[in-house]
Image (cartoon, rainbow, N blue to C red; front, side, top):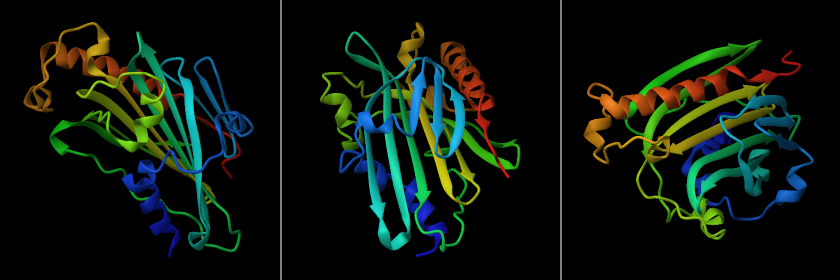
Length: 231
């Protein structure tokens, strides 16, 4: 299997669905990354991101792919209010495990639904290119990937959330994928549950205010990315 195919799988929902299998453990994850307030700091690969909120690490896991010469680490973070999920961050980091294998390559991010995708672009950080998008999606409390949150006794609302994603390839040795989402009802404004009111050609009033607030915080996170030694 080529390294490109590995990264296609890395981006797929199949890997996310097995987030609870096998693992590096919440405690051991601190050896490779840490969160200090809003600062997300990774040591391997070395980068730093300022998060929109102070998020709590809930679960971490990893799965090896010996035939594909790769290992994927997954970290699940959240912010809750009154035992109700408000913000969610899933971080995936794929590491090449065979130095003799070819460099990793990553495909472009793909939106769930174009009509509810509000941003899709790229920015440069040194020699690296960061692909990103902002879209509307729905949290699914039955999803296997979210069961670590459910097991904590936190209720996951089964309605719309705004999500920002970004992805970058670190020197062909690692791929980093962030998915940050926030409940549309957590902004203090009454918004519609109807998908048509969120269409990018029609969005207005409170829905547009919530979207603009989310986009601002996501772009601040994106622009905060600091990558070390990109050479």
